[in-house]
Length: 110
Image (cartoon, rainbow, N blue to C red; front, side, top):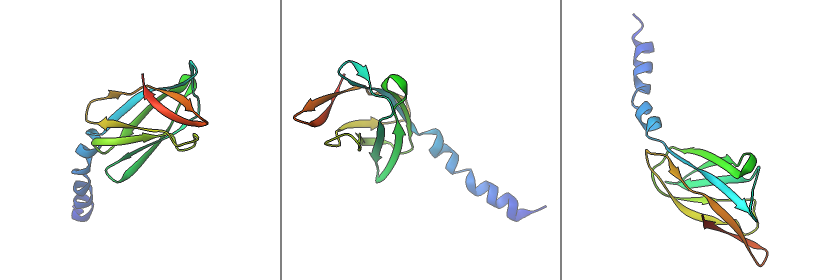
């Protein structure tokens, strides 16, 4: 029996619950009544950054491994608008509207 191979496999077992407890954030980003497609999203949580992108119609779905208070940011939009979101084991919906404030944008929850 190859104990090194078994030991290496067992070492990965504690990592599985952490992945299963990842929080999913989902919703949409809207600008002037239309979904924003292809927008880069970053979720900053627990010192880590989880990237994502909006799909057609502005919809997004991001699995965030960390839990707790996080910041969702649109880094490529002028002003890098951001909003506080919370990641937990259950999926959480966060839909936003981009509001133009003098050439810089803000995220407002819908």
